[in-house]
Each structure stands twice: as structure tokens, then as C-alpha cells.
Image (cartoon, rainbow over the protein chains, first blue to last red):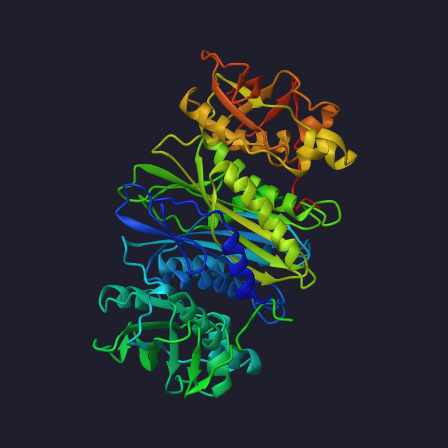
Amino acid sequence: MSELERIERIRRRVPSIRDSRLVLGIGDDCAILRPPGATDDWLVSTDLLVEAVHFLPDTHAPSDIGHKALARGLSDIAAMGGEAKFCLISLALPDCVEDEWLDMFYEGVNRLGSETGTLLIGGDMAGAAQIVCDVVVCGSVPRDSAMRRDQARPGDAVYVSGSLGGSALGLESRTGDSWDRHLRPQPHLELGIFLRKTLGVRAAMDLSDGLSIDLLRFATESGVEIAIDQPPPCFPGASREQSLHGGEDYELVFTLSSRITVPSEAASVPLTRIGEVREGEAGRVTFLGELLQPGGWDHFRK
Amino acid sequence: MSELERIERIRRRVPSIRDSRLVLGIGDDCAILRPPGATDDWLVSTDLLVEAVHFLPDTHAPSDIGHKALARGLSDIAAMGGEAKFCLISLALPDCVEDEWLDMFYEGVNRLGSETGTLLIGGDMAGAAQIVCDVVVCGSVPRDSAMRRDQARPGDAVYVSGSLGGSALGLESRTGDSWDRHLRPQPHLELGIFLRKTLGVRAAMDLSDGLSIDLLRFATESGVEIAIDQPPPCFPGASREQSLHGGEDYELVFTLSSRITVPSEAASVPLTRIGEVREGEAGRVTFLGELLQPGGWDHFRK
């Protein structure tokens, strides 16, 4: 089974308890909670970062690993238009990891935390054969306004922030701007808030595994078809293939009624129209008229 | 450095941002959040469960692993007197793990979830060399009433729930009631609520790593000395050593003014007075007048 199928299988088996404190459970970038009496909805997400899967200790400095671990979680908050507040970090570590590694790891976490107003408030530690880090991020968003994967509607235009394929190119080249983008992705928190608040966007997600597989998820959750009618903006030097299927760009993709004018840039990030949402087969994604097979990262594809 | 020293080092490096939405950060069983406007405080904890450290795939059925993963998190909520609400599970898995393993794992999670009113609302998955599971649990507690590690006061008596050493004995014997206790620990949620609500307990924690090391943490956080003046109740067949240092019993330890009468049982769990809180060297723990060296589990002791 693929990762997508596994998650769907888990979701189907969860007992269907109705709870007014829960707005949204499994399947989006964050779960959405509604604490009784609270003015805001609260967002919670959890993201794994695994040695030899998401990073290599030889090429990734511990401060970059800390940065990336937190950035992945913050990008989930950005995708929903939330404000980041707190994080907890669970860290499974081999014996050989030195105290200095740990200091630098948390330096990376705390630096990005300070930049984004995200405070480290807890976690856990354990021994393990390889480094496995799980980051929990909590954020908030005004009630009923979180951007979600299940809100894309036929007639919406599809937009992407920034440019794609940079992280995949960096992983290949290990040099220059693309390597920097791979090592230290920037979560688009300010942009997420702009989209939600100023443009009134209701449907968005972040690109963590690759445009093709992430759009498939978006289209599936919304029960729509997505037609990409022009090549997405490529990171300088990245191939078409990398821009369509490369993971870890952490750009935002969103949809919005085509009647609304979207600026060409917001929060210093370019915004580009790449296609449209259509009625049709739920989860179907096309690129220039052809079916786009998901080619992004799947942890369990054999 | 020991686990305790590492956590202290991480805590010291967190930027000191004051935030009215945060009641308590690093250092207790859960972090305590106060969403603006909310009637309750919210508890968040995260706990790792690692193959070959916390369980062995040969002897632990996947449903027991799922049970234990969630039980550890729920025990943190119980320790603060909270009501459990939601959980998220991050699971790093080797390729060889079958879909059936996953089904049984989540069966264990969902069964304990149903028993305790805890709904699975999210998570993450990734590949890895060994199974690493991180469980996030969210719960709630009336404002300002969470039981905490830093609230033990000189003059309090010290109590423990149930009996100790059962899990350590089970790990050794792999048979009978003690093995059951090791495989499927029961989080004392009902007891935690009774202690907070009916007895007015303010200082408590759960015993996850062993009485000796956990009391050291309790005494350190409260800035007090703890004198155990009688042997804690032993799980049938467990040795004195196992009851003092064995981990994973998930019993609750709490302190309360010695003027208040504590029943001998609550929520079907025996409660036993084992000692008292004294002014003195912060973090010092004695057993029958002698210094009690921490002998419980430490992930990073060399």
C-alpha cells in the first residue's frame, strides 16, 4: 500500500465520535481544535524527520536539521493561514550523538523559533539506532477561517507561491541557492496569513512531497479535478521534472474564485496562476491536458 | 550527560518569551496552554516508543505496542488530573512492516482510545530502520488546577497509587500478571481526576522511569527533599529493587498536606502513604534514612 492508501485505511478505522471540540481530524496539514470558549481555533500538526530519509548527518549540519525539523511543522501552520505559537520536539538519538550536536540542533530550532514567534515548550528523548525527530507545532487561526484541502471548488483558479524544484535540484547539486533551499526551507507563515485574511482564500495546502502527489491529495480531499494548464515556475536551474515531482519545496498552493484578482506577489513571494479546478473525477490531476501521474515522494512505495 | 542534564540544558537555552497563552513549558508531564477565552487549560504531551528500547517486535504484539504508545501519553494527562481528548501518532516504519501489523497497531490505539474517550485526529508516517512511534496527546483541565511537579511543599505527605515493580518483573519473567502489566499498562485517568477534583491535590507526576529517578525529578522541580520512610507497595513477586527502580509502572505519585485524610483506595486503585516532603537539599531523595541513588531508566547514561 502507498502512504496515501495507508492513511486512508487508518482514517476509516477511527471510531466516528462526534465532538464539538474537534473541527477537523485526519487528512489535512493540521488537525483543527475548538477549545470551548476560545476565540480562535487551534491547529496541531506533527511531522517526522528521519536520518537517511530526510537528511544525512554527513551533509546536513545539526543546526540545519533543527531548522528543517521545525520548518516542516511551521509550513503546515502556514498552509492553513495560522499564526505559529508553540512546538514540542521528540528526539530519538543513537548513543554516538554528542552533546555538541544537540546544542547545535536546538540552536537551529530556537533561531527559526525566534524568527517566527514559536516557543519550544516540551518534548521527549529516547535512544535509537538512527536519529528520528518528531516535531509537534501548535498555532491558532480565527474561528472557522482555516484554509483547508477540502475546500477547492470548480471554477477556482489554482495558484502556487514561489518557484518549484529547488529542493530536488539542491539535493542533486549540493551547491548554490538550491542547496540552501534544500537545507533551510522557509515556511511561508506571513504569506499564509495574507492569503487567508486579505484574499479570503479557503482552500490551500503546502507542497511537501511534490506538486503532482500533493495536488492529487488536494483534488481528492475536495472531490474535484485539477487541470494544470501552464508549467509551474521553475527554481532557477531546476528541470520541468523536478518542478512537477520534486519534494520539500514548502511552497503554498491555493485555489480561489477566478473572479478575484490575485496580486503577482505577496509577503515578498511571487504568486503564479497555474491552472483551474474542474468538476470531474475526484483526485484526477492533469498537466497540459494529459493525466499527471504522482511522481513525488511516497514513503511506502515499493 | 544524563537525560535529565540534557533536558535542563535544552530548557536553559529556550529564549525567555513571556506569553499569556503559555502556563507551563518544558519540564513536567505535559505543557499547559491557555487559549484566549477558553474555559479550560489545555495539556499537550509527546512520548516516544522505540523498537528495541521500549518494546521488541518478537514479544510485543502490534496491538500491545499501539496500546502502550497511547497509554504512555495518557498517563501524562492522568498525572496532571486532566481529561484526555485527542491524540496524533507519528510512525517511522521499516519497509518490512506489513499492512496487517499497521492494522493491529491502530486496533490497539483505537481500543484504548475508545475506553478513554481519546480520538485519533492526525499524525505522520515515514520510512526508518526501526519502528519509532511518537504519540501526542491533548487533554484539558479546569483553569489553574492542573497537578504539577513543582507544587510539592514541605509538610506534605507522599503517596503512591497501586503497586510498583510489576512492569520490571514482567519484562524479566515474561509471564503472568506482571507481563500483562508490562504489555498493557493502564493510565490512571479516573484516579487523576479524583485526586485533583475531590482531594484537591496540586502536586503529582506519573512513574514512567522508576520511583527513584522520578522522585528525584519531582523533588528537583519543587525545590524540596523527599524522604521515603516506608517501602513502597510491591507488585506481587517483584523485588524491593524492582519496586524502587523499575520503570514503566505508570502509577501516580502525589503529595498532599498531611492534615488531609487520603482514602486507602480511589477509582479502584489503592493509595499508600510512603513518605514526606521536607525542606532541605532540592532534589535529594532518601529511603529509610539513606540517600536513594536514582537507578531507574535513563536513555543516555553511558
